Length: 287
Ligand code: 13P
Image 1 (tube, rainbow, N blue to C red):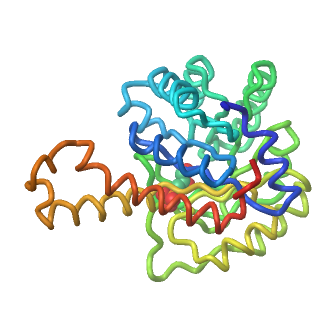
Image 2 (image 1 turned 180 degrees about the vertical axis):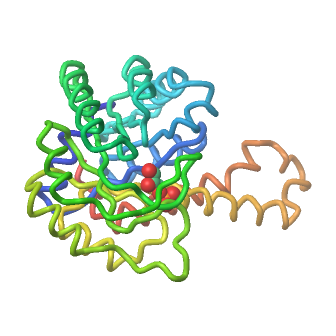
Image 3 (image 1 turned 30 degrees about the vertical axis):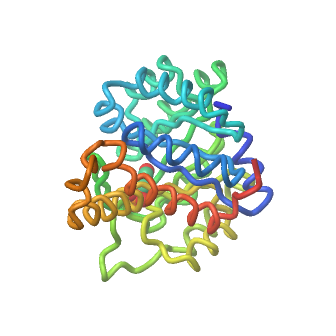
């Protein structure tokens, strides 16, 4: 069932668990994530970066694929199709393409401009029934060419954006996209606590889910995080399983070169990663 992320995140916030956003890159990725969410009876958010959207030939292709898969695979758990780190123009393209949720990343604009653009998108999303994520304080690291320095968000600015009527708020708390460097200082729970105090029931989003230790994830959920984004970890799992298959020469045995065989270990590795995250985030059986 393709739905906005609003209700699933409100339930997660009230129930003290988080819903995973898993980014998709192609058909195998999407299939593996949907299958696992269904098996675990968990709500799920499919994240699409602008780069991944382009790679899959455009947002319309992505929306059509996801809708058809939900139907053909009999997926009954709530699924949100969500633009990840959207530009202003990208948001409108996804609204038109049939996404059920978007993120407008205005964190690189001066706060007044972030507020103005977010406000405009709140009205459009409300009218069309989509959920909207906004961001304050950039996420560190690089994702698909979007580079952030990783500074902590100002809780007062978070409140300003949260009050505009958005459905979820991404706030930088020292989190980074991609692998965490050895000298990473960890998440700033002080910042998270201050944001949660000011924003109340607003579901908070933790980007850069790859490589955050389980105890930090649990503490973040305790402090109001209801959506956790994971991208790199599925990519690493896919790459490792595929490398192993080829290094063992399995692509040269029988019809091991058949893409349905060649890509199967990677797809299984994505499923295992998603299963582990759903268990950690506590969203199993919450569909
Ligand atoms: P990772 O690639 O670090 O898991 O981050 C994913 C993310 O935050 C998507 O927006």
